[in-house]
Length: 304
Ligand code: CCH
Image (cartoon, rainbow, N blue to C red; front, top):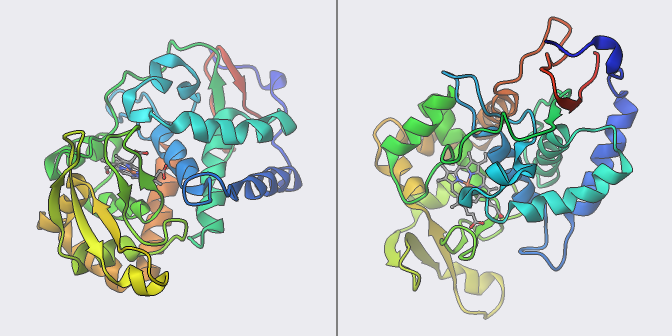
């Protein structure tokens, strides 16, 4: 049964949304966290909230904010994302009218733009599940230790094609891996809080060598000698790639897109923005007015 329209408030005004976006911008600068920004982990939060979508069963996706429940939040694939949710808690308290599902996705859009990336289209109206009955099963997010077949299995399930897989992977120009979260360690690019196409450029330019970490996890690394010149005498930085990242180079359908995005930053920004906007909308049913069609037992949502 659809939720009655009269229960739901009307959509927030543009000015109200602007206030939320400004509050997110204010919390991005986090001098004591990772590389000084909450941006990368907020992008990962939105991606993992949406990346559970399965088009065949029409389950999962960013609607519902299921990660608040142990069933989804406790998925080892989501390790570390409690940090991202905690960053946004103050915004939720200031603006209780916005649902978690909208806030998590909007925060990523704000962060991407603030870090120098493209404007990503975003539409509100997501609702928050009030129990975990519709939370998707664990195991739907990708495993960095695998290869191209696995990437296709995961992303085709969501409805993406090869070009979109490569474009979305370009988000690894942001942030880093934490041994205590995923087992992998390090960052992909020198400046991980600036949105760029550097990930693709480094994938192609560097000589990536397999390395086994003390915890037994295998990744690929490159010692960046130029980093010594950049920060005046520190020891050279070691950059990393996941096995899944490396599969973009070796797969004959993925590689041409790596090459194009390395050459053409604008094209990457355009394709990334479209694919990320699509990711955030997966599984969200809207009526002709753009209003999310709700089931029972949800909180939030609004009339358009
Ligand atoms: Fe990713 N990602 N990601 N990723 N990811 C990790 C970190 C980030 C995979 C594995 C990992 C996307 C796709 C994939 C971000 C955005 C996106 C980590 C380290 C692993 C492992 C986690 C840790 O230890 O903290 C795999 C496999 C895939 C397969 O395609 C996509 C798509 C996106 C967004 C569009 C961002 C951002 C991070 C950095 C997070 C941080 O905390 O700095």
